[in-house]
Amino acid sequence: MIKFDHLAEKVLAGKELTDEEALSVLQCPDEELLTLLHAAFQVRKHHYGKKVKLNMIINTKSGLCSENCGYCAQSIVSKAPIEKYSMMKKDEIIAGAKRAAQLNAGTYCIVASGRGPAHRELEIVASAVKEIKEEYKHLTICACLGILKPEQAARLKEVGVDRYNHNINTSSNHHSNITTSHTYEDRVNTVGIVKKSGISPCSGVIIGMKESLEDVIDMARSLRILDADSIPINFLHAIDGTPLEGTNELNPRYCLKVLCLFRFMNPTKEIRISGGREVNLKSLQPLGLFPANSIFIGDYLTTEGQAGLVDKQMLEDMGFEVDLEPLNREIAKAL
Image (cartoon, rainbow, N blue to C red; front, top):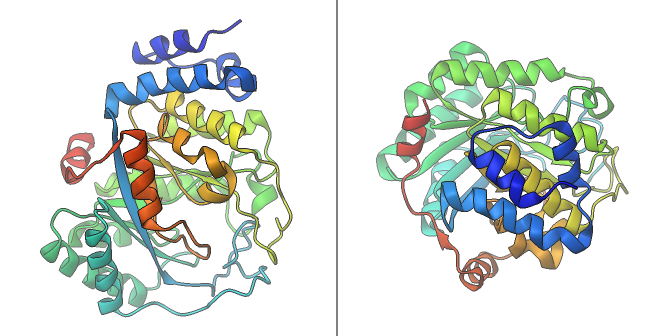
């Protein structure tokens, strides 16, 4: 029988989990969950102490997307009644940065729907970022604009974008069951372009889209190989009107096991509890901070998050503290 504290020791010694060990984490009996969380916390504490990174997201362009991703309310195949609008004005994006700073968020995430940014859209973001970096020097700016070309990545780097998010979302094996309008390789290639440009890569997953346990292990291992600096773990919040409407495979205990696996598989990386945190972890949300060291505050793209004061109280109650250290230094070390 695999002992989870031995896995923590193995990981801290710089070794990688085997598939058998990874599977034992996801199949951890519920009565052993606290033991697993304790083991994952040893790894998290070694690299991040008890600090939690805060991230805030702004949806600068909603809907109007030509992709057919089965989980997304903004997809062309979605019938979800969401608000749709074209790219925000520069001043609106800058106002979002002010709000992020007020909430002590270390990272401000500028997101836009669509396959990839048009020239006009990219320039609006670039212009906004340039001013944000002058006004809020401590903020790490993360952009998430879809599939990028090398020259677009270079432009974002030029104006001061620190990090770029492009999730692999699922395993290479399961990808075609989720979307057919782009390939898994398209996503991996964008992460590569981002890294080559000198921008810190952020790439994560969505759990609960009818994937197998082996798919989850493959996701965690793929992100280790991609060497993503920040790994957002989303838990599917199935939205009515999307192809995955009604999907409800998750429970809070399994979500915690997934977070532990990603901490073991990517021990030095920022593991961020992202979309679906509130509806899937439910009352066990605080326990997610034992393996994870980062959360979103505020709302997500088309769904609401819990109130910021509730998150603040959760951190205080758990004895964790907000990481106010400028993330730019961390990014510089990683490049």
